Length: 570
Image (cartoon, rainbow, N blue to C red):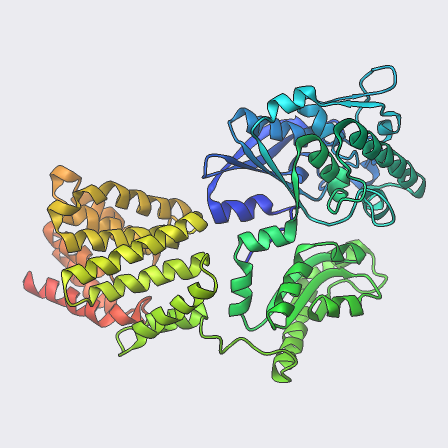
């Protein structure tokens, strides 16, 4: 499960979950350079996702080139402005990985704010200039943000000022010397004071205001953003709670684990979630700061392995990572196995809502009671977690199979309608899931078949839409190719049927996954219709060579149907 806390990876996680597209824009980087930054427009048509690190991040900047006093968040504001220009009214801004420490002053300036000194002159970019800040004018900015909702997804919970504030904790990471950290603290103190006086928003002690070089403070005061704990927000978006409860144990990773990791970083939020669920958790990291064993245990980490050796130069640790990682993983696995064996924490293997257990029973549905038990497991899982997208499409799949066994058409249609509703719910929760789209179309197709050809012509376009959506997400989805092949084969030409398209998709299904045997019989029919008898006959030998069929429950029926098709033609 990919996770993010507002820093790197937020765009990838949300695109996978919600669907959408990437947009590139040339912006001003943190050192005044030109850089190309990417952000996302989600499929809902109203949301943009911006990682400030893409525009104003520290990655790729040599340490000797860092400028903690002069770096700017201007490029982040330019991305927000571009999203507004494209009509997006909900802006998610991921905070983390910044090179700047300007409190979001550059971001606000890009959106129309004016930052003035005592003589009414615009201040230059960077944090150091904020020591001379006399007034903030956001009149131009407010006009652009009317009706816009901004959510700041903070990778840490640090306040802006003080011992745990932005300058003292993160200034050194951005290249600040001890003297420069003191300048940054004065600059942020002045920034906070003027924001509170001119805009009526207190940010000095606000959790998350210190994230991304204080960008949280600027987003809150100037854009009216709601600051959320990034890890918790993202984990909830991913349905991580349900996944953790289905697991036996949790393994996560982090580059460096130090005191800052306990201010809301994703890996430790995940281990805390595991602890609350009664699951042991292990952590692999690049470097581990000394003296943290007690805090890690309280955060739910039962075992930890670090790649770097104490006192070792960073360059050597990085060079040795590939060689050391297997050993670290093996030691971690042994430690977690010991925790499970000693019952230090209860294992989850027996939890009845396990998706893997439901899958296993589904693929044994040719055995008495297996399908019913699989569906019951998924219903229990959905009762506990109604928005579990993975459980929803699996439940839809099981309902389709139950409909196939229904004693009459009316009952079958009822199953198919319930299946379609569950699958569409899964799509709405996870539009980046090819399986969810496929299952929605699968249920729709079965519903159409049950109602008869003339009553189901209206489903052709939406069914094709669902399969094409699945293939955009997973171009080698054998099931989607198979269903499209069946559709083109069965439809009359006047409503879109096509032997050529049927052949293309059925052959693609077998090319993607030869162990997926459902398309074999129909492909043989197409070959025979086209006069390609040898290729149809060859499919019989080919299907019998499949050692591990993708769907064992259908394998024997697929062989029988294929042999019948080929033998009848002789």
